[in-house]
Image (tube, rainbow, N blue to C red; front, side, top):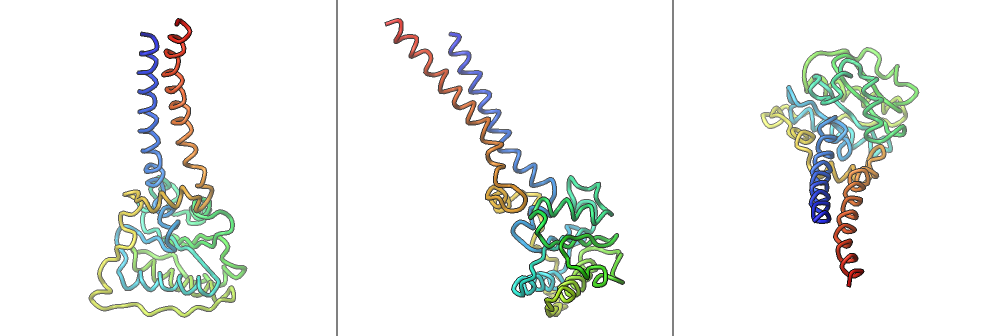
Length: 239
């Protein structure tokens, strides 16, 4: 009787651990939207107001050209505190947020530019960063004004650091004025691509995350197995 009770308790604990393990990655993904986006993409665009397709694609193309030129950079455009998720307290503090974001997506070696209405933040942007960004920002507005500012900033930064990259033209047609949907809802819905990237260790140390969640499950499962074997051993000793 006692063994049966223990087995039921252990099974309940196992079910609870499984629920926590399933919920934890999604909670982390919702914590900072840009960190999820930038694991697999080079640009994070704000949720609202949205960036137009023409402006967004120009910035995406520019970062692709910079990467091919040997100067990869990730850009986070933050229009409102909503874009920061759980890190909303860092809104209007672009450099502090840049430090936090870098630790989430790549560590000290990543080249990163954060663009907020209040100004810029960044990491590994070259010795001439102050000269390159002189006269740019602060700026008000949503996705388009900030993305255009990022276009100018990335072009100046790469050129100042010895990697001149041509800025692509902005599509101003009807199609180009439509809202860009490249990362809308990505982090909020916690898609499998972002979780997979973190589980493989993309960014700052995400490769051990699975072990944190799996360890209690393994221990409880082992306990269930031992409890299940104990009655058998008891019966065999009685025989």
